[in-house]
Image 1: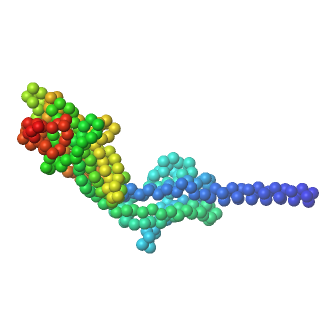
Image 2: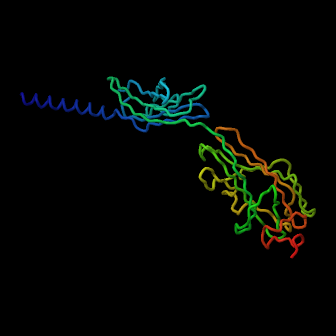
Image 3: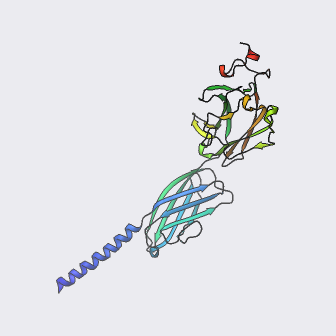
Amino acid sequence: MKIKLLLIFIFQFACIMEIKDHNNDAMVISNFNVEYDQIMNEIFFQLTTPLNHDLIERVYVKMIKDDLSNELVFTLNDLGTSGDIIASNGIFSGIFSFQEGLSFGKYEVEAIIENISGEYISEVTTFSIEEQFPPEIMSIKFWKKNKQGQGYEFDPETTEFQINDDDSSYLDIQVEIKDLNGKNDIDFIRYQINVEGMSAADSCDYVPESGFQSYVQWYLDFQSTTDSTFIFDINNQFLAEPGIPIKPITSCGKTGVSIFKFIVSDYFHDAIVVEVPLAFIKCGDNLWDCNVGDESNYCIQECSE
């Protein structure tokens, strides 16, 4: 009888220890995530725990800035509200707004889960809010290229784009951007063109459109980076050429002045807008630069043989 009672006691004690160990194992924090939106001035917290809801007293986050003493406390929920998407799935979340936003600097955040027995577990992480600087346009470079992508760079302030008589040519443009917050802060770079100052031969029956023309395909793609800047080029997935195609004079190529408008959009600042006029000329306009180009567009009329 004593042996039987001892076995029952050992079995019950083992069950109790197993349940207790299981509950301790469930006191776990995983996937603790912090995201701060500087545009909306909102902070989002999220963590996952396998601990049974009936055993949870509170799930919350403490946050403090490295050079300040005041501590902020945020209570998370698993009710499908206030930033939490799905109720009772073990993922506790919360989204909280600030009227004036958080100051720049480094923050320490501690996620805490307390159970009904007063025990708790925590996990600490840090995140930083960096000061946002507006981007700068360092340069805008223009090239005239042929079908093979070969050509020369020119300055639109001093040199016109020389349109070929018989062969198509291509206009390539690159914009160099400096952004101290990195490339990911640049929303997009696009361009628009005003062709009101362009004309073609009378037989072409060409009427220029008014105002700046804008199409969704007219944006610049990131191409490369330097030590401190980012290079964007007009060649993108919609432009499978060495640049913007420029028709030759024999195919109703247009001459005159086009105005290129470049728009640099940053996530945190107003867009930067720069306009660059570019003159297109043909052989015989008495503007031909005989020192650039190659034999395919050599202007004997102005440069002699």
